[in-house]
Image 1 (cartoon, rainbow, N blue to C red):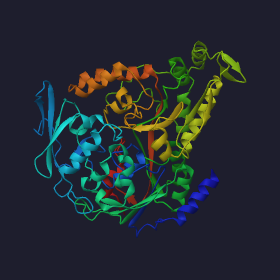
Image 2 (image 1 turned 90 degrees about the vertical axis):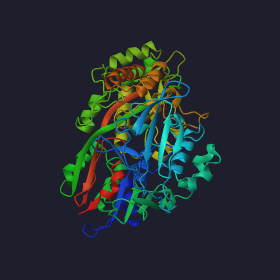
Image 3 (image 1 turned 30 degrees about the horizontal axis):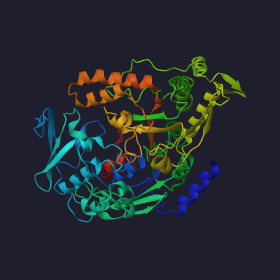
Image 4 (image 1 turned 45 degrees about the vertical axis):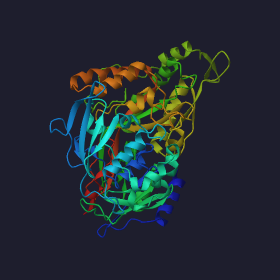
Length: 552
């Protein structure tokens, strides 16, 4: 571990944009633990990509740091109250909606081409195509048509009424003048997109910064976008360096090779707590609890994991409270479902699965894994109960949690082997194509009251037939869950939704397609000269407001 850290420090010192001394600072070097698998905003979901692209693009509508919806690329938030959103009768019967948006008049791609309705329509075409491979195609397919009023304003016609209509159907632009030719073969669009073949093309970006250099697996350089219409960004160059080993990430910060560790993709809570005790004089450390859910997906196509008794045994043989207490000083609460208690929809009174090794043993006996040989369980055929657990390589805390889990499972006779991959491989290929055999540990980030269609609906299971669209990676198939998700989406009454949400969480806990671990609290370790960073606690990264960052 120390050797890796030392090598990473040396590489950083010899790499681009080594940190300058505070006071004459017009460049910023940020360290993160992942490198994006690709740069197309529509293809695949990965935190590293979101973090970088947030500096180059403005979404139509986002949740801000106060968890309020705000317009970024649009001029006014459409609501039923202000008349920009309306419930309408559909020609074929039933109710739908029309939602009107106006794009910021001065919004322009980096090559001078105005951001227009044509870019919105093209994004819709990509998203709704069944073979394009976007993570969640449902929002796009719900749109019946897009009515252009002029180059900057349009109305979206949708086939259902949703409670989150003004964020769910807020389409994001793709530069049609550059990307449309690459979409002639939708199934291969992910391999032909200009975002990967011509990543430094300024016409791909319309935010405060544009990407000017990429070294795959190493770093990304961003410089101010001359066509940006908003507040002029402070830094003349930002370098985002991928340092997947978190010990090396900390060493690079202390050596001055990087200026700042991204809170969203940096040190874990335990590392932040230890860092604060040693270096509080040089850095400000803030802890932001949020809608970040660390968990283990179980592959329900694994023949052994099809048995719910085995899944429950895996869960109750984990002492999650001890992990939270010993590794995180009790500051990361145990998760019992995917909904954080900070979210108003959380059903906090539902019974969870406390640590119970005796119950785990009984469940495994009942499931046919009752014979102990050399400390591990076997079935009547002499087969050993063995699983593989994967996570992101180089993440020191996840690797520590892995080892604790391995030890706790061994105590009840379950043999667990550890195998990890770099994030860009794990998320870009292994998880997306569902080639992991049994268990994979990672985190989901969400927004407030985020409907889990892409992660829990059976139509969102990634398959070769849908070009691996969707994020229901365990392959949960539950008809009532599907129905509840669909009902939540169209229920406008808040209290009525609360009851539906409760049942969703109940089913989630009963199925045990996922082993919930804990809700994360991320440490933001900031040099005292850097200001303007406002953690959100949800899936919108702090870099979405990069133009507000300053060196004092």
